[in-house]
Image 1 (cartoon, rainbow, N blue to C red):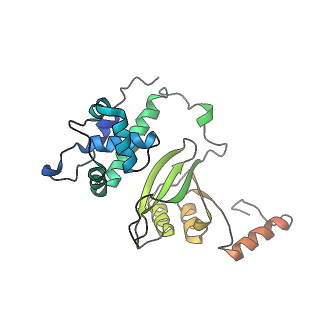
Image 2 (cartoon, helix red, strand yellow):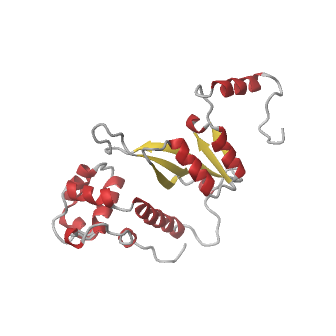
Image 3 (spheres, one colour):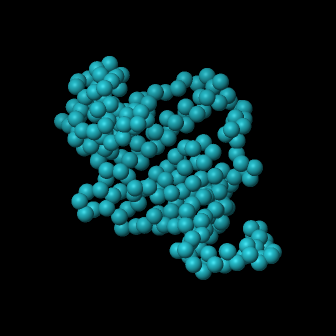
Length: 239
């Protein structure tokens, strides 16, 4: 086993910059973030449920998380999350998960068979848009993110915010242009069945697997006919 010491969740969360002024730091930001993470992992979704989780576990748990006084109310946590640097938080959480995985695998040894790459040798990523629960306010639409998940380990690699003045496809195209895609297979739904997106993946050295549906009627018809006509279709690029 890897004998390097494993750093705790709080050590990582302390790296996230606290956006509050000095007068607003009644509770450590790392403690509140840790409470949200732990409550979510225990199935307590939402800030009200996070506060409930803290109350159920009592003073001892609050002290372990880093609270030095009575745990905060829902609005206090909400105010912090509204101002926190989401990319910085995501980065440290990914680093925390990575070091846990590294500590469970001996250095210089292969991953277990259950975690081995597919026979294709490609690193498979699933791309999908998600709507963030509880972010809709009045007539304003809910916040959305584009999630990249590594299929083999079932691990979220990144979640990119989708600005309200952009759509999911445009954000995905930006990612394609700046990510290293060589050796990767990108799996996505029918929304991504677009020439520019697919060509961008190929140009970057990657492969793609997207669904063809009725939103691309001509392409769907051509694909169906290709499988009907004998020897009318080949996945090989040279064909």
